[in-house]
Length: 72
Image (cartoon, rainbow, N blue to C red; front, top):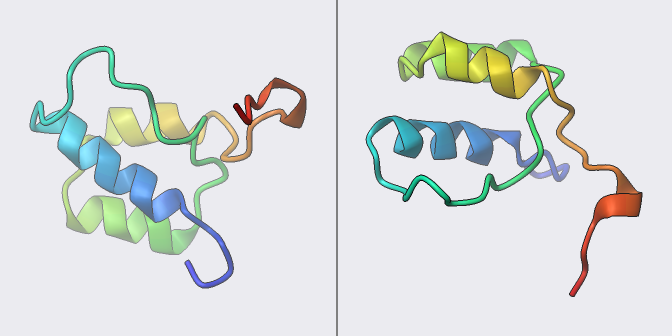
């Protein structure tokens, strides 16, 4: 996280999604979390985050297309 890798927070968001903490239309915090690192995989496994959710998030890159970012 010190280097600016915020993908751990996405995994925390997935945990909240599993417990229905967010409304169905709540936007994702980032476009994805791919590629996965061993540390992220270990975190997801340790906290028993649904592997299907993790896999789906890992299929998309963590960085959005800069052309599509809305800065307000």
